[in-house]
Image (cartoon, rainbow, N blue to C red):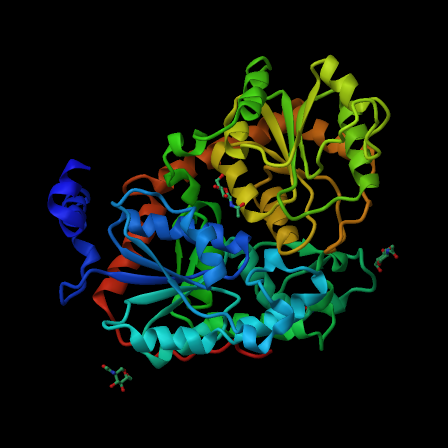
Length: 514
Ligand SMILES: *[C@@H]1O[C@H](CO)[C@@H](O)[C@H](O)[C@H]1NC(C)=O
Ligand SMILES: *[C@@H]1O[C@H](CO)[C@@H](O)[C@H](O)[C@H]1NC(C)=O
Ligand SMILES: *[C@@H]1O[C@H](CO)[C@@H](O)[C@H](O)[C@H]1NC(C)=O
Ligand SMILES: *[C@@H]1O[C@H](CO)[C@@H](O)[C@H](O)[C@H]1NC(C)=O
């Protein structure tokens, strides 16, 4: 800091680069490497992109995040204050003049009504011109752009300027690769009903799915979303490559398939959360949060169930009640995070809980209900946690793997049913609760008996012990991947080297049609 005030910004960056020995962050003309990051306009996509930009910045890469004005504050408050990290935000205008119904809204999270989703998707397509305007005004041009998968046109925009476009898919390569053969070969048409399993053609391993686990729009040939996903996949195949917040050892077979069979490039640079300083994760936690960690301190190792379905999945009251009954029947101690606010009246029972549930659980020291946000990583890292009941969003799945906690898997929508397969069938580090239906609105299909059974299976007996050993081993591999010389460490360096070296970007490849 003293150095900073004495010699200014530039000097600090040079000193910092020297410390990290970053000769590879300059290109052949000794220009500092500069990368654009272009996250989708939704928090679930922005947060992992910001974390990725931080990782590149920590390597001395000049990083610029492109977004719209109303999203800029969300991004800037997630950036470190430290002047060491040169992350810039550059705003492009949102096409409000064409979409009056989206007044004051520039994010999927801010939509006043779900009916506006199709309108929002249309408005996103109009960001292409402003993005190209940014390229036009950039002297010199950046060395590459890492753009979200849902901006398929970014590949063409970048190509116009001779810049490599790299796709960021917020999930794992297993799930990203599974989509393509399903859309192209339609194996779900080969079965007679929704619960008859089908295999996946041109995909390694013997993964099976059932029709009800696929999004409805996959099965409906002329749905605009099916067309859109095909456009996304087609743009991926023409892009310079893909980058994943995952690690090679977790998805070896699928990475090899992608690189050697499909002949595409990918970099696996995660789990990015393991690059965060541990102190950062723990800071600013409130008294309530300390409370749940103190509570965990009083529990035996591997004894507590942690239930949390992320910020999106909204379970109906009837399903929450089944969860409560399953928890109570299992006799396990638990922390349960719910998206409910507490009722004011002390004596009013909450209608989504069985009668007297919360009081009973609290007084017996059996369980704790957290309303709203919980310090998830700190909870998962606690040795008392025995299993994580999760919707299998990639962030949560990667957190469980990173800390070595087995899962009870309860996928809901998005690519979560694919992620579940990686957990329960490929690595056998989780027990499926038996959710079988992909749905944007969660139904109440899972009964308390199934919930109790899955939790017990994941925590008791020989099979559970083996499962825990397997996930602990993966967690070790995740840590090694991020360490110097590890696979993710090396992948990140080789991506940086490649971008710094520059190349002739004339790749023209399309998905072969069946
Ligand atoms: C994913 O997990 C990390 C680390 O726990 C957290 O900081 C981040 O906010 C999470 N991202 C999303 C999109 O939930
Ligand atoms: C449909 O099933 C047949 C017989 O099992 C199999 O040979 C074929 O590959 C399947 N087609 C697809 C697209 O999965
Ligand atoms: C679905 O089809 C399979 C194979 O034809 C059959 O064995 C199974 O009973 C069917 N299930 C339902 C629920 O109809
Ligand atoms: C890039 O490669 C193409 C095809 O090999 C070639 O025609 C073109 O001249 C090259 N461009 C540059 C700038 O080297």
